[in-house]
Image (cartoon, rainbow, N blue to C red; front, side):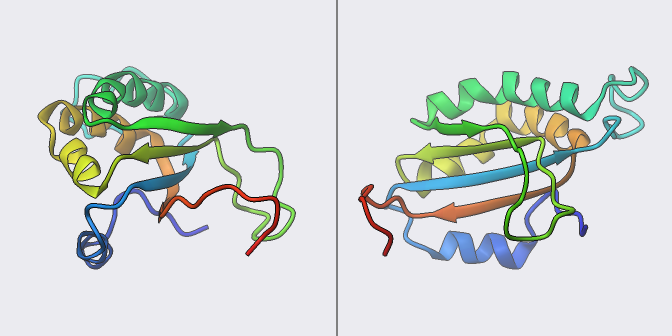
Length: 143
């Protein structure tokens, strides 16, 4: 499995080029490191935290920022199995974060409290997928 932790510059530029005023949902699929991988000079580098523990710290410290920008967790789920797709992609955390618009998402990731929290995410995550979606009304049929 290829590892993805942070966006590449081209992907982030493409994100910023999309409509910033429309609501958006971010599908998050996250696989944890067995042990958190903090930078050597970080206070928690020698504490032997698991990736799950580090991700819980990320959630605890980033949740107030998410709320402050008007975002929320719209859905959470527990991974069971992949029916269609790569069988080696097993996710430890799966959720959809809803934002009123891209300005809110950009404000969140620029917030100093969030920037201090993201080190826990970076230490926790082995690989992830962050997929921007535009919410549509729910219907009884596909398409």
